[in-house]
Amino acid sequence: MNKLAVISGFLGAVKNRYITYQEERLLEEKISMAAKIENISGLELCYPQDFDNFEKTSDLLSKYCLGVSAVNFRSRRSGRWMRGSFTSQLKNERAEVTEDLKKAMDYAEKLGCNRITTCPLNEGHDYLFEMDYGKAYDFMEETLGEAASYKPDVKICIEYKLNDPRARCLIGNAGEALAFCMRLGMPNVGVTLDIGHSIQAGERPSQAAVMLARENKLFYVHLNDNDKLWDWDMIPGAYNFWEFIEFFYYLRKIGYDDWFAYDIFPKENDTVKTFSAATSCTIKLMRISERLDEPAVEALFRQRNPSESMKYIFSIL
Image (cartoon, rainbow, N blue to C red; front, side):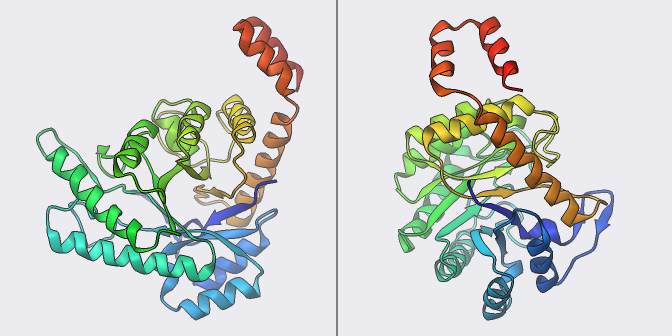
């Protein structure tokens, strides 16, 4: 089974625009909590938050026997790079974020995960006639291209999202992410497919996964769920049961054998119990998807008869 990880940021402060649900926790408390979550093998650490003392971070991971699925590079920062970081019109800001990304890549390499994931949420716009789109793409190619060249063995995974906090993010769906990666042409720049972001963007996550995998750009996967209207970061299967069954079927089919990381918002609920429920539901969804007989499914694909397909997929329950 693919190894399961939790993004460390969700083990600390939990708040939105209106309510603070849980206060920030010290790093050791977050890592010790992760070790208590059922079926969890590692963490997706957040940079710079989790790297004030690298030796301590490394020692804590060893102490609690946890691996690292990725280093999550936070390019949106309060008080810095407010008009975008990778796409900032200011050359000095683009240089700052590029150098900071290189530092995160150094840490990832030392931790042995060789993967950076970054969700460029603040790269985008709120209004029409606000952004020069061509220059924004040029600047993003410049910054991420320089970072990718710095350590070719470290993957940079772009996590696309339709919006938030911008009304429209620059890389908003799988097609836009793939187009950017293909134009950049760097073998170590690919995509993080967050299934909740894919659902919110109106995609079929399985189709997005296949499209990315065809170009060897499916580098990493985040798991969560939502109601298709907003990125609520819920437990997998809460709303989109069959999407997850199809998603896991296709991930096996395309040979994705890597980490899954949870991007789930526990709100006021017990954090360890919330993520334990998430892993339990995920494993159940995976096992249900494994009941699908590939030759039978392939035969149904050839028929293209939804009545027969629906009858078959419900028969596995």
